[in-house]
Image (cartoon, rainbow, N blue to C red):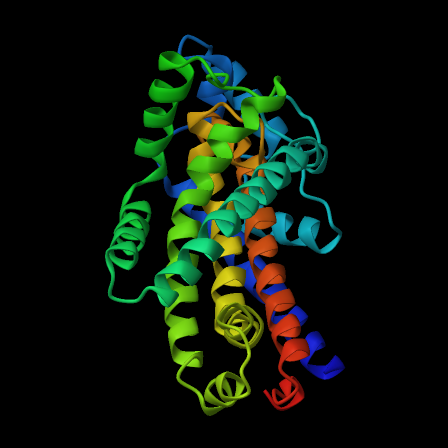
Length: 308
């Protein structure tokens, strides 16, 4: 197990460096000049060159990349080109809001998916099953950038129940979390249903029924208890995907998280902030998947991760 964990951590470092380097080159190849964004189009050429030299943007691209990698090895994400603030401090200020939104979306997804998946499996082939799976298909099909404004129109502007955007009021978390968690709930409910149906056809379920156990106990304890492993795998992968989906959701609701920071930095061509935000998201994705693998092995002793 320790060897596997070390191997995965080593792999995570290479993945993070690869993602950061890819973003570095793509940002520098995309049209747009951060100096022009900062000084404006009417700035004098001498002022532009002076600022470009001060920021190190006049160096060859490969040399800038080398400085970027050396800074990463010393855990230095650099400073914002826009306001010279430390990228690490900017990420730390925004991380709490993103974690709050992700956890709330996960809670809503599980709250919807578990009952829907169980009821659909228990009522397989009925109208209830078709309705639940139809709603799950609809949830997967609705993009965040469309569902978010729709919820705002209905529950904020129409009914006045929730704030339109921002993070000020306690109820301001509801609509962003519902927007972000809907697609995850749809995926989880279908996974729970299929996993439960597969488990309920096993011999030990027939044995439990032959012992005279109640239907609820057979389904919830023996069925759902043994159906969690594939669901856990999907949940870990989708939890990492929530961080990517949070970029759109945070933008729609003006939620002050890492996603909205990333969009602001892209608009300003703030290279260090974009690189730091993407690196933080990719590392979170890798670490969440590593934690999922370890928890999977904990729940199923038959797995020997050390041999992987």
